[in-house]
Figure: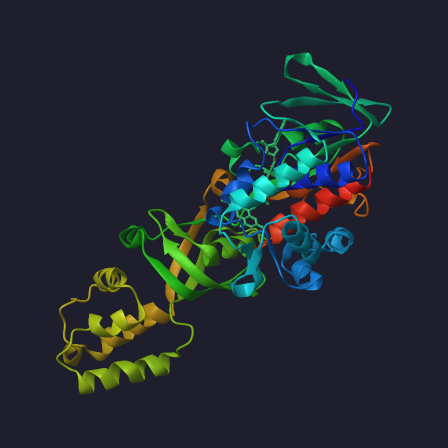
Length: 409
Ligand SMILES: Cc1cc2nc3c(=O)[nH]c(=O)nc-3n(C[C@H](O)[C@H](O)[C@H](O)COP(=O)(O)OP(=O)(O)OC[C@H]3O[C@@H](n4cnc5c(N)ncnc54)[C@H](O)[C@@H]3O)c2cc1C
């Protein structure tokens, strides 16, 4: 069988590459080893699909932690606004939420996937699911085809590899593309988990399991004395912390070597100073001395957190405000403003939202996504050594780079 273009991996990058290539009348075969397209896309944004962000291109590049500048061409060629228009004109209305995050109005990733599937069909893209590529076939530094399972060969002179990274491997991204590329001489920057929950050393963290806190601030001093911080929600788990602020924090720590034994400080009420909290506590003790200490805390935090926090601090939860010593008051306020935790590495890459690292951007032409080593070979999406923060940026990167690869074949 001959095909003008073979695309390996029907995630957002591969689907968009198939759409842009087919819109230029190419004969496209899109292959995925899963039984459906967009398996990972379906669970993004907690099933709501935070498809992009409505920020400027410059901001998007700033929020890309590794090799953001590589994206100038692809984001200019197929920007977030282009993606939003594309999705909306094809029938799925989008909305903007806090911090510029864009979601389908229906809050259902299924609507995005159905729309993409409809366009693939309309454009006559040949879609093969349950089909795994085993090898890329090369002759004299030019792509010649792909070998599938059972030694079936498909000849072609253009292949786009959009096999994703290593995170959530049960959804198909098992790092196959890294192996293909490495065999052809591409340099793979060590894949690492990013946007990943953080293991915490302190054993008492288990007592807080399942509790979520809103709008907290996480800070840490990293190797060069630089202070890094993130703000947002967290959830305590049996091993440590997760939730948007913790995930983003992992992406920042990732930039530095030391992800183990790193002291991190949680400010649970960043909008209040220590002085203000002292004032609130003293005022309340004067006015409502008969009330229990937890009655103040409940104004700020979930009830179960207040009880657990007092337990952890070895303060009797039935203590009345008037009975609270200065030492105990300082202890509570210090825990609120400066809850210090020690990292014990990250959860495994299997639990990471994205993979940082991947195919070196130095070996890919940013204007076309073509390999600088092998003619006719293109890369797009998470397989490339580019990773961004949460907020819809990673999907935009996949859609933009996919679009550019397909367009330039
Ligand atoms: C839980 C979770 C939530 C997320 N939420 C968001 C979000 O809300 N917003 C956001 O911007 N990003 C989010 N992301 C990140 C985003 O999903 C990824 O960045 C994006 O899916 C990468 O797209 P991709 O097309 O490069 O790879 P993938 O989506 O991983 O697709 C790769 C495809 O290649 C196929 N494949 C692999 N090897 C082969 C082979 N040998 N033969 C055939 N097929 C193969 C796989 O089956 C897979 O379908 C989230 C990720 C996770 C895990």
